[in-house]
Image (cartoon, rainbow, N blue to C red; front, side, top):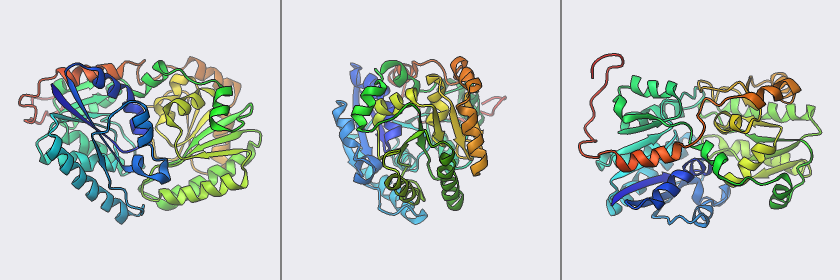
Length: 388
């Protein structure tokens, strides 16, 4: 049996890992170890560990580390606690391999604990650029700490190799989030309204706006501008999900709560929707709006427009359905007008996602279970375009 550990600290990350978790759980040679922490254990962010359990996964260990402050000092303390918690769990359960996804600070802390315990690391979504975030540095740091790499495009595969990683350990598998669109039975609009206890109406935007971890003032100003821009579209309902528990995140939550209280018939503000409801809303909405990676990775496969605001996702490969907008009210209004235009709807209907056509999770499971772990901790720097 091969003991595979997976860590998840956020709702979005768990959604992207879902089918990989399912595949590993069903594999006859896999002893799956699932470690859950961060936002999953926070009542403020929906206590989504319950959803994980309802999905049929046994939680091997809970990592309690999220402090109640989202200042830089608070996040640093959360990272320190995450590393301590992960180190304790790894000492008890001794996994053969740790699988991580993305660019979250919690994942960096968990990876550090694994590295010091000589546990090999496999990393999903490496090589991507997110220029408005400290996560840019975290993602590439995770790549350098990892021994197997699962990228979502050929561009990102090349970038991981540019970091010095050995090409035979880097696999372009596509985006695992697309598997949710192919495998989940998405809800109809009528069922969504019943599940949410909210009237969606004929037109609505699906909104997620996360803080820019490099810039507090720009984050708040851009959110305020976004909310002002929505005034130009009074006939559109707004379904808004909470931002992540990043630096400055609670400032944005306060602003969103003010909006929700002032327009309860128009605005649905929710801590967490879960993948089924979120993707069902994505499929049914008129545009995905904000700065979430889901607007880049999954929305094109739904043939839905994305209005991507600001610098948070700058650097990512984007489909033609994605409209890049600046942070001013005027720019956002113009981008929204383009998104709902008949011309852009035609673009969305014919768009091809650069992130593949599905099947990423199966490919990840195959490699994780079949790659030799003998001497995998020994890494040679591969000079890009030259000899290793």
